[in-house]
Length: 100
Image (tube, rainbow, N blue to C red):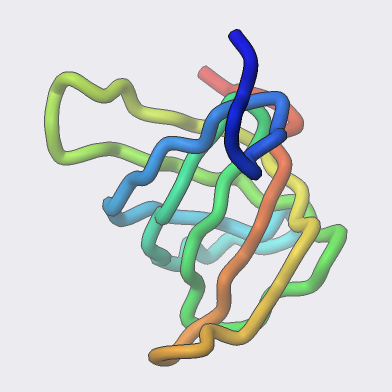
C-alpha cells in the first residue's frame, strides 16, 4: 500500500496512553513512566528523569483494557529529549527482545 504522507517508517506507530514500568538492566528498582506510542519496532514514553542513551531497559506495559495485549520487552534507548511542555523526558527506544 503506497504511503501518501510524510510518515515513511517501516512500522506504523499507534498512539497509546497508559502507564508503564521500566527498570534499567543494571538496577533492581522499577520506575514508572507514561507510554505515548508503540510500533512493531519501538516505543516512545515519558520518564520523570533523564535516562542514558544506549542503556538497556526492561519495560512492561499493561493496558487498562483487555483488548490490547500487555508487552514485556527489553529495549535500547536511542533518543532522550526534554519535554517542550511539562516535566519529564521523551524516551525513544528500540525493542530488542520480547519477553514472556
